[in-house]
Image (cartoon, rainbow, N blue to C red; front, top):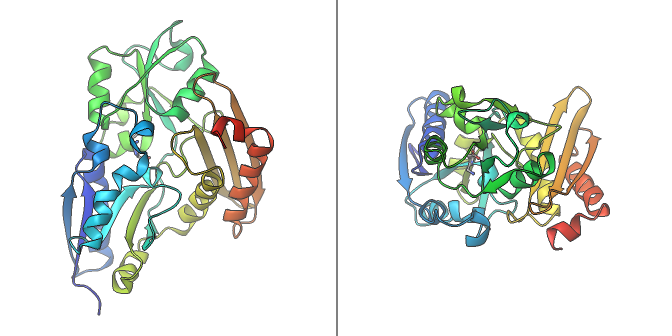
Length: 305
Ligand SMILES: NCc1[nH]cc(CCC(=O)O)c1CC(=O)O
């Protein structure tokens, strides 16, 4: 029997609520007559803001409370930023839909400087992402990199208060929150790589709920699933940890998939790059191939493998 109501578990940040509302609206349009409700929840990842994510347990912290709500029958699905979803899902859960991807680039945000090159020697840049730190270090070894956590609004407020000369955020998050005017320049592939899955919204649900899965599958975007599958397969083959700087960007063109991958070291700014192409039915193999090329260059040492 198909459910008549779907309850969406979501975090309470403005970005998470926007994404959950977006999915709710898409579900209502796709399935007229279906009732869709939001179940906003607080997660440990949102509550512990004074430490880098890497040291408090990683990305899974943003999912756990939402998964518990699904297991206890308080919600039918959860909406996530795919880049916050670990390469390996908890057993019993699947991602039945990935929505069309937005701009996957990062954004250079500053009140005084137009881009990275315009920053004066020794400028202070805020980001707690090891991937962003490693790429900043590689391009500009002179910068002072400072931790910066919290939701998008909090990070912008800290920039505006003068704690940083610039910060780096995802373009997708700023666009969704109507803050695209804050983007001074884009940090984009192939010179700068986003996180695996960045700018894609993923829907998570219990594998044992076929009625729910059938309703959600209607929102799946096949091209997004292909490209992010290659990125996530690469990440998983490199250990899948978020405590290491890994970047990935996969494009789908007429001739199939092309994946660029990066592993870096935040302290030294050393970056390793690899890329490869494959037919579009070989996304997972492509991800593993680029991971193998990175490991052959010595990525294992940077990753602590
Ligand atoms: N780390 C938090 C997070 N998770 C997803 C996004 C942006 C939206 C997306 O990538 O889909 C952000 C904010 C940011 O990195 O600036």
